[in-house]
Image (cartoon, rainbow, N blue to C red; front, side, top):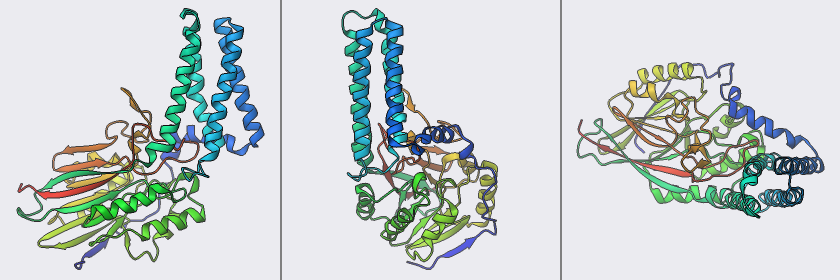
Length: 410
């Protein structure tokens, strides 16, 4: 690796007092559904049975069909029991490690909603069509469960993207950058092994990582932190690995920053830049910024960082969220890589993502965007949300991104 220059702003690294994400609706919903984790298992089962009994009573009240309502109640109990059984097996199968009690109630919401929707239309359905419709919805829910937990989260792929800049001389060999985002490690699984495999296969010039290394439920767990360090220690590229920090509630500064201490193969950029000399006339300036989601704070830090960084080479901004895109365009940064949204993690046909956890909503959810000289790519990320959120992906498989930065001559 050629000699490079490292410069860091004299910006305080203290986080704003107000945690923007923790004040958001999504976080509050996850905390609400997380409450059952404090309850004994038998009480959780009793509450689940009570919910199915209420659903059966509501069916009977709407349809005035006692036998059918009792059958629906029994079937609903069986479907929820299957959910619970599968949730309990996930850690043993090394699929995921989330709290089963909380996830059981999250998964109950669509099951109960589907049941009530069928009850509403049941009076207009002849014969046993209401039962068949109920069964079809519940079986589809189980199929989505299996796909979301066991299949799609492990379909990690490498997405190839081309970016163009006039800050590379014409005829210059392209620069290949591998982007990794949102690892959200609970425990190392086949998915993380696939990360290392794809990183080797991609043969990038350098690797950048845009934060959220641990799962929100495991960000103080010593074994998780040890395994994240183990994973990061195995990443390498000829011109280095550069990392930034993700959301403050996830990447707790007091637990995640120490992961990087003494990790010689990874450079943690906190409001800093490093110009990398890749040889043959190729320079790349990597800018790294902590993410607080306090947009005025982060926008100010970005402005100071850009003013300090050189402009004689392509600039690559590594920042956890797409929320700074309007400011990045104004600063004419060449390439902006981020994650945070997970692409929604769960996407529904015709509707798209249910949540994005971005203050810009659906404006930059996932994929490629080009404005002016700036290319933005929002990664769907690799891992899964924590707390009570089901460890599922649906119509939104994980990804890593390989960028080929090409000269365009202006």
